[in-house]
Amino acid sequence: MFSVLYNFHIIKLIPAAIALILLCASYANCSDTVLKIGGTGSALGSINLIAAFFEASQPDIKVKIYPSMSSSGGIKAVSEGSIDIGLSGRLLNVEEQKMGLSVFKYALSPFIPVAHTDVVISSLTTDEVINIYRGEKLAWPDGKRIRLILRPSHDSDTQIIRGISPEMGRAVDVAFSREGMLTAVTDQENADIIEKTPGTLGFCTLTQAITELRKLKILSYNGIPPSVNTLSSGRYPLSKPHFIVTRPEPAAAVRRFIEFLTSAEGKKIMEEAGNLIVVDTSGK
Image (cartoon, rainbow, N blue to C red; front, side, top):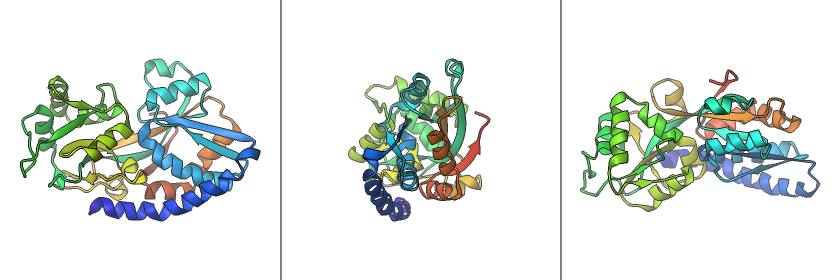
């Protein structure tokens, strides 16, 4: 199964990461610096992985990663000085741009359709997704009911889906008007519901699916399997950007973390975790 292949690669990293976390714990009491990171849930798995290797190479720095607080929450927390690095799945909006923060894109992850493991199909087309959102396609080929999971209308994932095409955008509007629809507020809640509820369909990032070892059925989109390679080559069309947000003059520990993330070692870890590294300091 496609998802099993990805799990195999990430499983190779996880034992080492766990060992590094335990090693770093021995330094916790004498650590001079605590680096606080938080934001969009879709980036947390890979950042946790990077943090474990970073702590092993920087014993004077301990990294504290908070549970999902959304892109907006992470940006606000950086502006207030509550955390050092914010993780965002979108660009700063007009009001956030007034906060004087620094932002750069560090990765893209394939944005993928995922389903409960009991779903019998292995691929979806854009037309099929549109029909599901409209409520015109209500059952899988075996007759099981399709349970579509929505995200809040303002969420970056919803905006990615809207951006597929004008027709898809109208289909999303229809989905929000339908009664009895399930809506997941966070990335982790979204994956939890799909894992536990038969017949469910939703979207998430490839990096979240594989770093959190989610028991999800990863579907191809328009016949193209999602991967870092198919995204890099332009064959796979959907992706979610991840941005790092900091204060204008970040502390030395922040700079060291970013340097590690974008180093050759960091890039290798991130790519195996389902990310295409695309460092872009323009803030676009």
